[in-house]
Image (cartoon, rainbow, N blue to C red):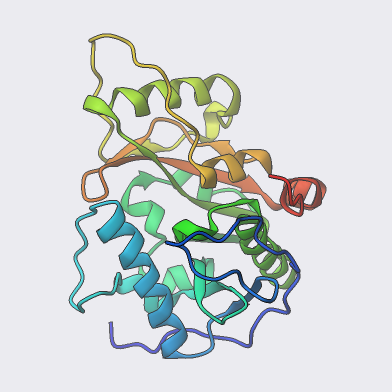
Length: 270
């Protein structure tokens, strides 16, 4: 897309949270200042996020990216999104997610989640929607502090734009023949499903397997963050063959964030 990225002034940092990790020979020096969260203000800010995404998705996870620029993860929706960045005390981008509002999604031809799920029953709900996606964190900063910083920025954006529902896709590693993902999804379905009237249908369902039942894998941190805020799973997962994951659709009422945010995401001991 040739459209210019949609950028605004930075969010006022909420989280004065220092990451609780010890420096190691293979890790960067300990940041001298707390993490800071803000929206991207320039093309270079967005490129920094896209470089981090490439390092995590392509180099670490081995995802098949359809990128045209070496070393960057990008797609057509980036130009319609606002990009939320977490920086360490040296100014390096160590975490990011992108925000697609309903107005921007209409200009873009839909939310990313609509490429994986039929969202008809969910989008019929009254209220304002926003989607987050392409969330990733540098390996040295994968802790509650960084997730908390991202969510503090999202909470500010939600409040400033009167958002009623947050949506997105959360990824679960497939495991051997997809059994690990199926086991975790079955466990989630017991406690976290939306009402039947709001169930969404995956466009590429995760294939079923009649072999030996697998043990559920560890809960991915982003999915755990959603659920702790009170999010619900939209139904059966969708297979993402490029990323080699099973995606579950997430629906989160922002009223739940207001009630539960502080307790779960400003806790330094997570």
